[in-house]
Length: 234
Image (tube, rainbow, N blue to C red):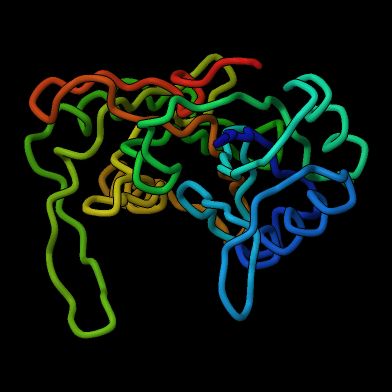
């Protein structure tokens, strides 16, 4: 059976990379005595798949991991087992069984939502609501995107689905997070700051991934739902 685990990553552990998170869960699953399935061959490993890797320094309350298990005592039991072996900064939020035909976590990612806020609670983006609305209303938002082989100008506006300032005075966005698009939140904020004349200091902002989504609609008319929308408790 394939199981989808939702977890949060925050605090000091936001500074560890994706490979370290993967190693942590491999060990946590063993310590929790989950009857996980292993691949066959000379070097067997746990069968698992993460959704979109999180950048170093970002917090998240919408991370996902798929694992295959051979037996279980229910989702509540598995949730408690995993929570008991987690450390401060990684928290397992839910465990759900996936339908047989469900795609893996990484292949299912279509979008992600983020909150960008000042670390200093006395500072916020209040007062920039109209400027942000003007920015979002543009038909083109061009950025310079660097790859290993070249540098190119890219219009990221089609991949920005939502953009507003919330009640806390933070910038909230929902953007394309698929393998084909993959718009980093910094692409949006850097372009907006240049447009609005906002200057920030290094490490002054904290970016948090709020949720990761799959597309339950079509390419022409997307309907974004959380990755655990298709799962159910068992």
